[in-house]
Image (tube, rainbow, N blue to C red):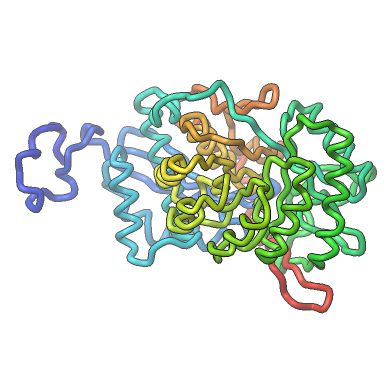
Length: 436
Ligand code: KDG
Ligand code: MG
């Protein structure tokens, strides 16, 4: 491999082999590619790339409930393709894996590519001594506004949960509620002694088969505005409030719900309808001015094409982890910036601290940042992933450690064995399968 940056530039392009392209890594190659699986209260898949100079980079490849598919994709089909490559050639490696697979897009492929992309950004940051956000153009703000997950079965528990979040410093809060007549529903903490508590600590209710929840969209649509009326009255007009519809309504229902929530001035209504049908959002927009956030289950810029060019959404919900990494999500955000659409990156606890750190670096650098979802990981998770990002006075910051700023503790990780854990499924009251 050439180490002279200009030596081969005059050669005809067709005559240059992949290894002869101009490089900045001075002969360094990717030497080792490992896929690490751990389960410190929930499963995480992490890619670790080590260069011939001994520098390591981490990438998050966790797809909740389908973790081992990405493990196999990386171990069986990607690892040996990376060995010997120039670790600095991030865009070229991205294109090599994306175009080279022939079978494009999809959550497994795009999460595997994302992990490689993150790990290479981590390496480049460490080698240059810069936090990744500096490689992306530098900070465009002091910190990232974050929102947390408040929830409850009844209004008093919801109030208590919002208060807890405010005490922790959050300046924006998502509110999820139980629905009268239904059992456990998405986003509501399993009731503890007080009925309040934290949503989504694993392995709550998870095992070899999905648990089944029950759903009734009309009951939900009747109940939700009463909850937001109460929360807005209790916490005043300033507090940004968010809500996740979790893909359960038709476009028409979503428009109706958005309209009925307008008096309570939500920051956003998320995943109001399954967005594979991008044109469906035209109907939602026609019915309501409610700001809309979509995209946590998307994995490429193509999934956003209609939503962005027709300005059918206000926030891009993708995770770096599931959307081809920093390189690809940055492209989506640059595209979105033409239409004043901002970021609201996915950041629940099934995004590992590595994926979360990547989102923070990207969010700090882009001009069209909007808000960042943030749930603190469990202590067990944080014993495996040593983070350097901070949450102060409601603002997240990725920190200034070179690279992504996350270290993986092998010994701690090995103590937590993988165990299968599925997301729940949803049925309507007559037994019909519905979107969860
Ligand atoms: O794995 C599924 C979760 O990431 C998802 O249910 C969380 O919708 C979610 C959110 O907005 O955080
Ligand atoms: Mg969501």
